[in-house]
Length: 183
Image 1 (cartoon, rainbow, N blue to C red):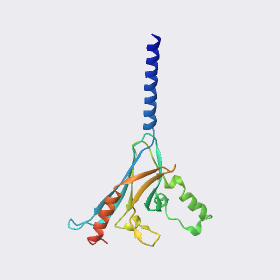
Image 2: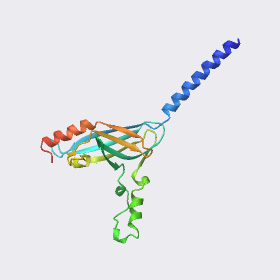
Image 3: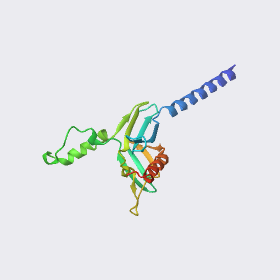
Image 4: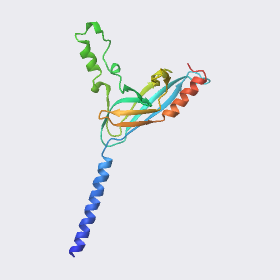
C-alpha cells in the first residue's frame, strides 16, 4: 500500500511540474508583427501610390511595451520610434520661446511618448511608407548606396526583438511598382 501511495505522489508531482512549465511558457508576451502594402488610387486603371502598414499584435498573456522598429542589412541597422512624438504633441512649438529647448526634446522623445503599450490581444498599426515615400524604408550602406532592408524587427523596452513578416513580399511589390512607372 505504501508503494502505491508513493507512485501516485510521484505521478501527481510530475503532472504538477508539467502544468507549471506549461503556464510558465504561456504566461509571457508574444508579439506577432507583419507588413502590408496597399496602393491607393482614384482610377481603377492605375495602381496609385503605395502605403505600407506595420501591424503589431500582442498574442501573449503579458503586456509588452514596443519601443521601436528596426531595419537591418548586414551589420547596418536603422531604427525609428514606434510612435512619433510630434503626432501626440499639442499644437505648434516655437523653439525660440522655450526656456530650455533641450528639456523639451528630452521630454518629447522620452520612452513614454515614443513607445506603445500593448495589452493582451491588443492590436496596433502605423504607416511606414505614406503616399509613395519609399525612402522611409531605405538604408544607406557603408558604400553610400541606398537599399531595401533584408530584415525588420520590432523591439520592446526590455531589448526583446520580434521579426516582422512579409518584408520580402512588400519590397518586391514596391520594386514592381517602381518598374511600372511609380514615382
